[in-house]
Length: 68
Image 1 (tube, rainbow, N blue to C red):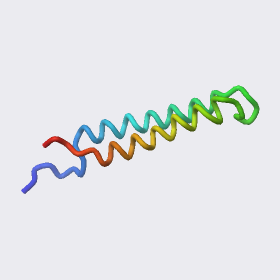
Image 2: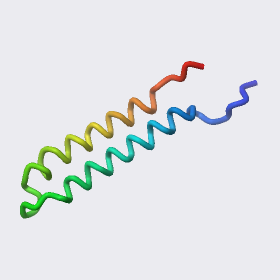
Image 3: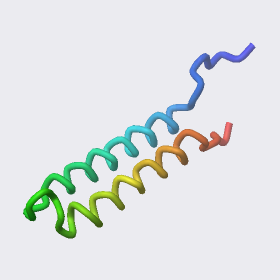
Image 4: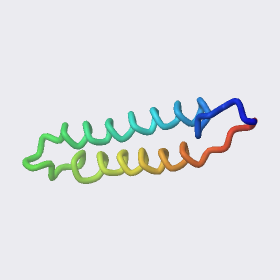
């Protein structure tokens, strides 16, 4: 019987927390845009790209297999 009842390893959870932090950082970057209604570089380009990278990183964190 498996001793570990958690669906993911500790590394998976750590990577997921990092991914959440990246997503939050992307939203913060979008909010920092000084242009009206967020139509500047930060609101339309950099923030969404950082957020998208965070979601891709989350998929990696979920599907990452442990070495055990």
